[in-house]
Image (cartoon, rainbow, N blue to C red; front, side, top):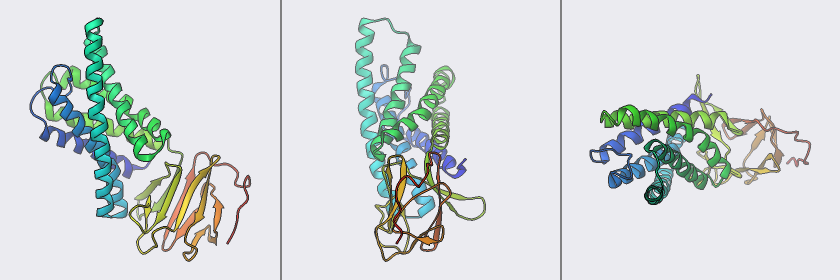
Length: 292
């Protein structure tokens, strides 16, 4: 279990709840039909801040790059804000139409709203990571999180008008469920020993994972050229390719130009070392390797 990532996501959820409580006026913030404007505002702020902080906090903590973290936060927050506010409008329209034609219980309507919101935020993660797989992984954590938190809100906190507690409780539960799902369902990642019990974990989520000195890289390394190496996925295998031949990238103390990664491989880039892990590791003898 990557406790650093878990804490980061929980902090993102709690912070999103706190900022939403500060920004929204009084009233039920999660009732689109009775309090549409407040609910729309709360949905946009909570979703945008939650997604933005999840994207920015790992960069800020592990790479300590303020500019990169800021750009991640702005782009992710913008996507989360726009998509989830649009989703809230669409849900409100659909709910109004259905209520006019059918007799739908309030409990079913509220359950549908929480599930709809979990799908909407999961879509944002899929867009940001350019991967449907990541969206599905996020959905596996967000759906139970929203159902549990939403049910508790509807039965206790919102009835008693404990707005701040409701926001913090929702953010904490959703963040915990998402972090657990992300960690349990992870497939491939790089671990870096940061000293003591602290491990920096970089998830290889998309079809390509780029390392180098530029802020645009998935893994930014100080003192390196813009692009040093790239890990790409082909037929279920991860292949590391050195982009800059002048930089010494060693795998298990051997220098390679192109190599298929196996679980447990030690990748040394400059003064930093990373251990590659994969739950879907297959024999690296399937494809040829080209040593430099």
